[in-house]
Length: 204
Image (cartoon, rainbow, N blue to C red):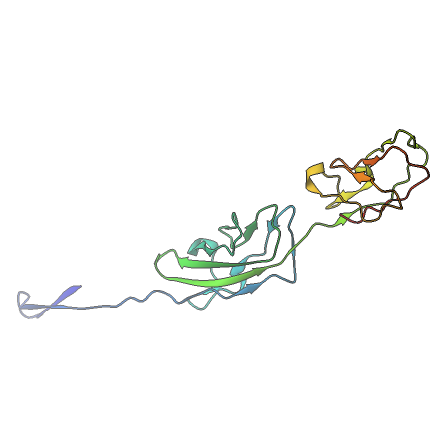
């Protein structure tokens, strides 16, 4: 900027000069966050707490509108996002723990930025396979047959599930060679079965 000074006694007696002023941006600090103590559900996804709680602008907490957040490394988790309030959106179908890097940039000075890491623990959904008793609806041992689905009383994340959400397998055939479990949870009993059987289907 340029200013001048003029003599009071002679108002036209003036001289200008330049002034150089350096304006530094406020110090912006994004600190690492660890949310492993509050795991999210990998099946449904969810939202973390805000990462802003330990971040500062000019040495103090800031309003959401004072910074611009962005994800700079998704840790291999396609679709993770950071919201204006500093919360992270974890998409449904997340299979493992993730380490995401985000940054905040000052709105007033868009190049004034600082990055930080976020550790998010993603736990698998609770899966429960319950015992079934089909002794009241016997299968013909000579011809074999198929039982009702064992999935009717099983749950994934506390609810019924689609067949494609689980992978079933027989872990003990009770001495019945050839018994199988189908994708829909029904059991295939082979022809020529001579006695009652007990097959184990573990927690899926």
